[in-house]
Amino acid sequence: MNTTFICYPKCTTCQKAKKWLDENAVPYEQRHIAQENPTEQELRQWIEQSGLPIKRFFNTSGLLYKELKLKDKLPDMSYEEQIKLLSSNGMLVKRPLLISDQKVLVGFKTDEWETLT
Image (cartoon, rainbow, N blue to C red):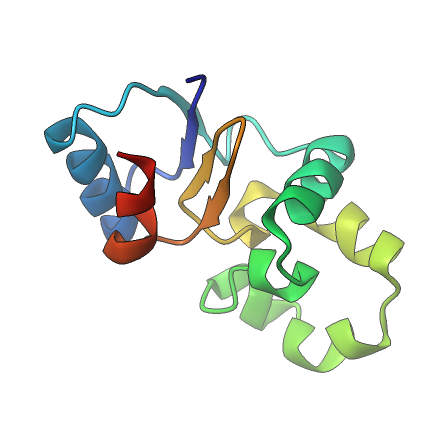
């Protein structure tokens, strides 16, 4: 299984998720979300594969989200505008992301991640 773990290393939730992956011997390739932003194409694919609404991919508790007042702006933005915005800065994207051939997991919830093992 080809699995990519997209995270921000200083994020405590990402650290917990990484520890969980290591403890459960899940092989993965790690990618730093701020150094290597997800592209528009990747985001479209992940959103479609996850079956989740695009809003779930926004880091709503992040400083940048709050600074840009996205809570008020997102409802008036088109899907394309939201994709462009998400791909413009990795810090806007909810993390960690776990991308495999079968699944896309957004955020770290142990019960969801246990479906991988």
